[in-house]
Length: 218
Image 1 (tube, rainbow, N blue to C red):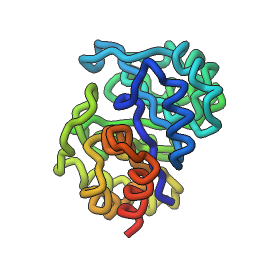
Image 2 (image 1 turned 90 degrees about the horizontal axis):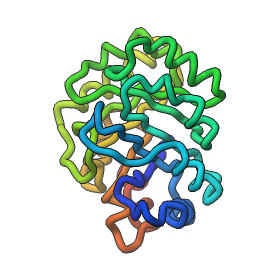
Image 3 (image 1 turned 90 degrees about the vertical axis):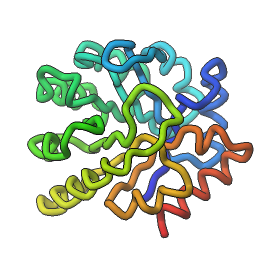
Image 4 (image 1 turned 180 degrees about the vertical axis):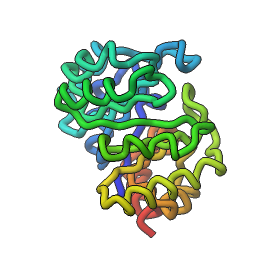
């Protein structure tokens, strides 16, 4: 099933509570929250207290993307703050297995992401242990970048491997998603789409989400 996960990186973070409520009303399926530490990626955003503050605004799943080094240190904090999915980067974990176990123990869904230069095959040993694979189609850290076309075959490789094993794996794509390319990206096997400026940058967000969903389902 196609799902749209608007990224608050493109929202007005000073009004995050209101932005989450509004994007819920506009028809989003999840809300994507990018946590950045200024080390794993060259940008800073927010931590668990900000997510906790926004949590009462909506019952939509909080799709929390941890772009931080050694995220195992903060899994419990983000779970308690209200995350429904915690996605970590394979490149940021010295012990990915322990990190996955910590997320599972915290009672939330497990996602693992790969940056554009990391091959899909790096995730293959972990597919039986995770709920979602996140393919970065831009270099993580900043919104508004253009999609890197060369990353798309990784989606197909992950979908093929998941199907071979009989896994109901969600494959999320993050970076440069817009109405003009979402159908093309979906054809590789992705089913969850992070959209920042293509939702928050539009005057009618409900129409923007509906347009993205329709284009992905074609």
